[in-house]
Length: 91
Image (cartoon, rainbow, N blue to C red):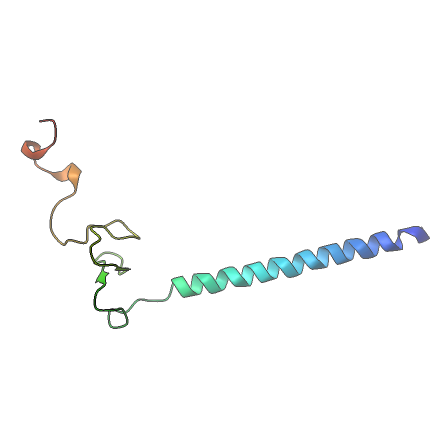
């Protein structure tokens, strides 16, 4: 039994290192989530960005659809599957 002391010490060290790594990665992930989940205020965004009316995500100018929820940013128009039958392609 005396020869297994090194094995116990190595196992404890192995587990401790993995716990430290897991805590580090957990905290690093939470910081990213907090940074991306910060509430957006239209006063804080640059004037050339367009705010999505559905989810509030700021989008670069020129985009037709929101980068987060894929809502139409043009404010008008209907989705392709809601067009009248006369305008449907192949009719």
